[in-house]
Length: 170
Image 1 (tube, one colour):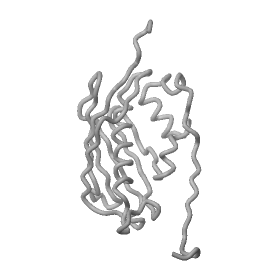
Image 2: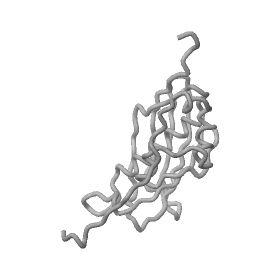
Image 3: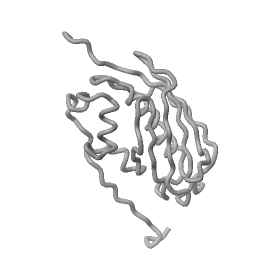
Image 4: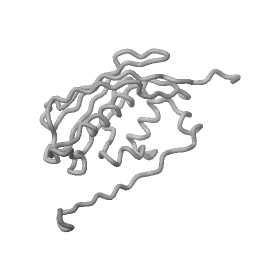
């Protein structure tokens, strides 16, 4: 490949919030609503895939993302890691929207089924995540990823570990 064929992509992002007390001072739903409204900066991963929250309610989130050539795999389509990142974000944020102040979550497992390929020409994709069962220690969630025509590109199911809030006196 010649130098004239090379492309570059510059990412601008806000550094990750390090003030844990501030992060956990709101409910998950309040935090995600603040992210959607632009009141707090999005996590750095959002810049890599053009991820934006469109809507959020308790146990339900809709996000969009922008696949581009920088997300391509060796065979010229969007890498499955892009799909997995967007779906994991939708699943995790759906769980986050159910949590009280002081609680957090992390993905324990993620199963993704890839149904259709995507390219940069696919344009904006929409991920919808919804909680199927929220528990005190674990939450179960599903998501799908669709193109602008509403065709399902991929689906996911996930289990998230729910942690905290810490009991007082610890």
